[in-house]
Image 1 (cartoon, rainbow, N blue to C red):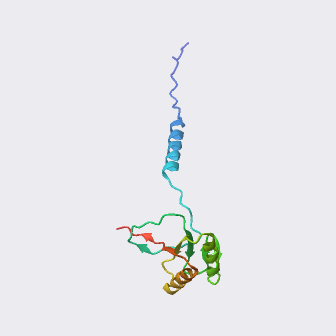
Image 2: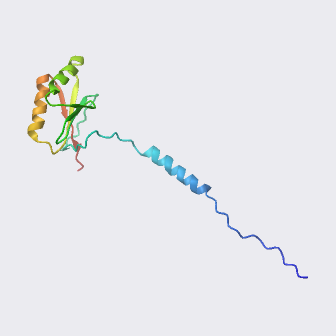
Image 3: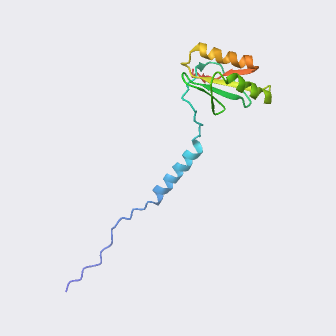
Length: 135
């Protein structure tokens, strides 16, 4: 009778533990490196600026799209009611700063009209937001 010698088992065992470790490390890396950017209420692309001056404080932002209603403090505001809303805000804090984020495609006359309403309502600090130009 012939007895075969015992054969060694040559099965390769694939382990997924190193791959899972790499995936979790990548997840942690992108969570730490990535930054969360707040979304805009409207798709507004402001004009480009070559100035490096930055506004400080927490001003009230007015978003003006090329067409459609304005947004002031997350609320739609009609241009006819803008002066009364601004007067109410200035009664709470007369030194309040305002920012206008207008679309680059807005008609200049419309933007000038909005700025004139703000000036007549008593706004002293007004900033026009722009995108910084890469040189």
